[in-house]
Structure formats: C-alpha cells, structure tokens
Length: 70
Image (cartoon, rainbow, N blue to C red):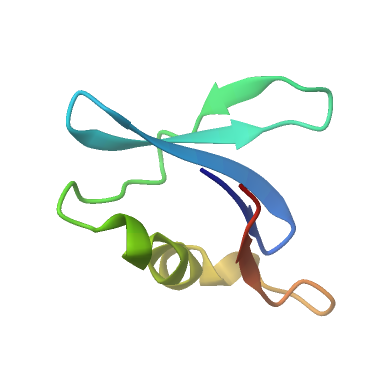
C-alpha cells in the first residue's frame, strides 16, 4: 500500500508478520523507514490514522493530510 503522508510518499507492507515502511524517493528509489515503526497488531484499515498520528510533525501549511494512494 502506498500513502501520501503530509507530502511524503511511503509504502507499507507486511514482511515476516510485521509492518515494514519504505520511504519512496522522487527518483524512484526506496529506502527502509527504520524510524517509522508500526506495531504488528495495527490493522490495515487503521494504517492511515496511525501514520497521521505518528508523523504529525511532518504537517505544515499546504501539506496537512494523509491519503492512501494504492
């Protein structure tokens, strides 16, 4: 699943029973978001709200929302 989190692109998927977050760069590269930890018991339908709460410090004028892209 891909999310736009306050104008930053993240990909979230399950890996070995845990959520894994990848930060998507503008040049198409991905890097592991090691400092973005989502507990394994967070359900898929809760991810958008969880990311909004976790990353709220990224919010700024013009970039105030979290949306699911895919």
